[in-house]
Length: 374
Image (cartoon, rainbow, N blue to C red; front, side, top):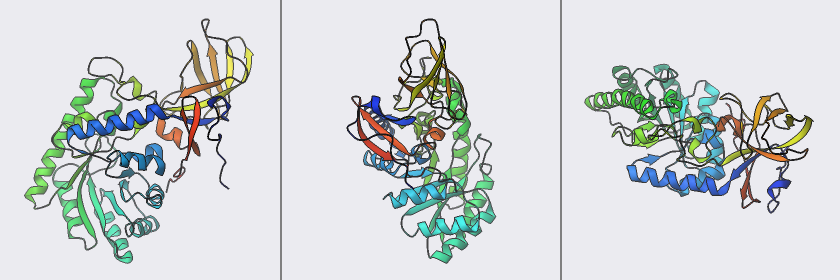
């Protein structure tokens, strides 16, 4: 069953059913255009991360603005993107298990598909699947440059893994996946820069070792919304993966820019619209948007438009508001915009984007890869 959208095109925003995932189209388009301009000025490529938006509609808009393709984290996401007409997809993650690898190899017959590895046995398994399907899969070595998640050590270990890829019959060595995830939300601008400089030193040394081994490192790809200017200007990375920039969220807004002010390069374009469903006391109201409408892994959402009103707690279907002494009047049935703390998992809670311009619903986009977790 396809879940019907919470709005209709032409409807005023106040009539949108809730909870609903809103996109301020003016802010969204500003972010897409600004990133395209910034990336072009650095002379590098941009491959936005589709784990943020899970939408072929948004992916096509990013590519129309100059992006070379899309990243994703799961084979299911890649399948949705390719089915939606995206021709160049990097699964910037490890894919393990015969069923998943068969799906990946099958997909590589229809689009340019890449994947990352940090294990020699996984290289063999990917090649076996590619042989079965008569496909060629581009494989990147993921190096751990400080995130402490996936990845082999930079340097010799990465070179040995690259040699195994290069020797495989149905694989093509593509380069390095080098993403410092922990650096994205380091608040201080200088501290973020230092983290990427340290990472860059390790990546640069690995590229030198690959060249000495006769291996061409076509790509060094990575970088996120919190750090991409540092990777872009390093002379090491030639492809960026920033994805959250198109939406932004409350957590990213806490990062500091070089001048010490809060990070505001991109505009907040993603909101969760919610309705006041209860107002039992003067200083407490309840929204119809809780855990199932907005992720709280990076903290609680913020109220976008009202002063002295705090989203103070959440349960499955309820969000509790604390109304301060200077808060404006809030009435039953009022609709409020929430700024999610973390855009990516919030998007995955919804089936539709409701695109708003000038207070009117202009477009509806399905969250096509929602739940594509395998």
